[in-house]
Amino acid sequence: MSHYRRVKLSGGCYFFTVNLMDRRAKTLTDNIDLLRDAYGNMHRKHPFHCDAIVILPDHLHAVWTLPAGDCDHSKCWQMFKAGFSRHLPPAPSRSHSKRKKREKGIWQRRFWEHLIRDDDDYRFHLQYCRDNPVKHGLVDVARDWPYSSFYLRECVEGLQRVERVG
Image (tube, rainbow, N blue to C red; front, side):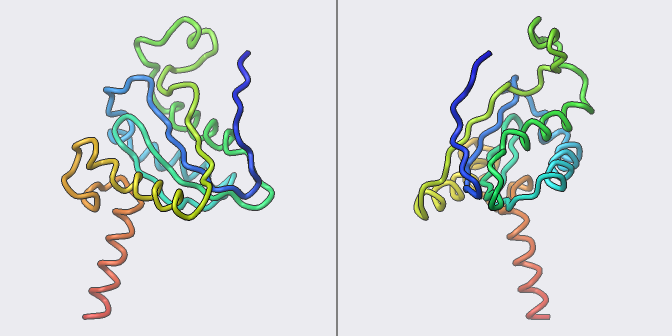
């Protein structure tokens, strides 16, 4: 069994990338309600601060700040992936080893994580999340992508401006 080295810092701030096995699929955005439910269920059991998140059709990026005393982000991602996959049929092309381990073959087994080092690194990764839908040609302007924490912030800020004027 492989043992991956992960930086585990109690209360740390991390940038994550989590990918589907089929990078051409649109499973995440096509099943956004299931994804939000799985994320919410995981978050209720293991609370942390989500600084930013963006969901694209085949992968997602997130910046999380873990609470003091918590460094087990792997458990959160495992719970999230399982909660989402539970409601979907198995991938038709899943490997023998995935079938043997009762995996549905929806997600890549691992995720990528980066410990945020300083304020510049934090700003860079927030901007990376915000701009990722533009980079992938999904929208022309980042604020137009509806599956992003930045989209939600734009909507809330817009409503607050309307309420102040009205």
